[in-house]
Length: 275
Image (cartoon, rainbow, N blue to C red; front, side, top):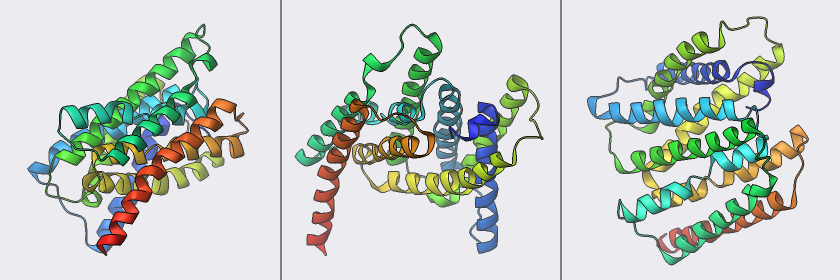
């Protein structure tokens, strides 16, 4: 995303991202005979995932990334356990094992270390606004995780994904046209190479996998697993974008991986015993 934003404005990037992802999924489903119309029970999932998880998260995140480093953006955008865990436990009644609780708390500790408020330039209003937008993005994603987990539609995550992306694409095109102006058709060929990755893989494939997992994993476990995203995003931003790996980011990433391992290792052992 950070690389793509060097060539186009945030809303146009978001609109084209979901348009290409949507086209890829519709084409694949039509070729394999898996394309189906959603039912009335599917509409709430189409609305929440399409408008909140996809449209709002991606559009606001793209705007924020113009003033926030890619590594920090990945951390802030995926602080979902901060919102998911209290709601899942105290409102929706999910029960956590002691290992899940410890793993999630360890992961959150890693997030807090990575955030490092001392590294934020509080005098720069754009930087502060970007950080706040990313926290709001994580709230949007968290609410969708909870909805997908606790609402039962008729169709699978794979069947709903192109309709959800279409729901995100249409308003994004409208907003991009009226807020940022017409799309520049002379954009660099490098942008389309970025979009060839972002559309089919980072959007179509990843959203299907994430929303499929959200249906069978507990909300708390899912949000904890998502903490792997900022760690990988941080490493990739250092390797490919030349961003600096500070002590707080490195330490926080290591702590997050420990938290994920605490939950995941126990889950894999449980499955092995059952087998």
